[in-house]
Amino acid sequence: MDRIAIFASGTGTNARKIIEYFEEHEDVEVALVVSNKVSAPVLSMAKEFGIECLVISRMQFYETKEVLHVLSEQEITFIVLAGFLWLIPPYLIANFPNRIVNIHPALLPAFGGRGMYGMNVHRAVKTAGVNKTGITIHYVNERYDEGAVVFQASCPVQASDSPESIAKRVQKLEHEYFPSVIENLLLGNERK
Image 1: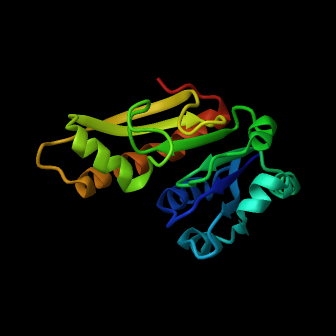
Image 2: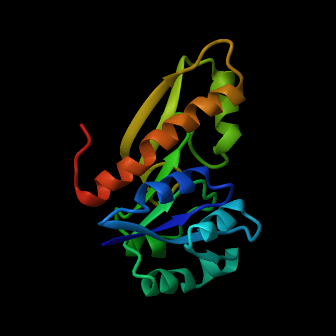
């Protein structure tokens, strides 16, 4: 049985889709939600599903290994970043090699890096005048958005689009693909 910890900083729309997807799964369960914000809506959503939650401080995350101890106690085998805005520290990457994935709301390597998250990405896509955007699911390394790409899906960007309409289209792709790509990674199915 794979046990997932979802790290999230915000509302948790992707976290909800992942939790719902694996709710009755025989081989995978979402066992923990970790957030760096005590008031993040993702925490109350996770509690609705009976999932344990952990709120972490910057000091705990970067200057201690408390998070690693909790993950070990919970027998976590895989970490999913779903709107988590802090850089993952080297000790976590070392303990979960190729077992941490993130979703980015653009087609990396374009529109990635520090500060490129959420609406910042969609505004940059609109400003650049590109004709397509999408999602990138990638492994996490020590740098923002530079880990090996696992999966990408694209959608068109029209001249009439606003950053908000781009965001809606991209979020639809996130919800459609993120849970099944995680399942494929965990169960060893290659996506064609």
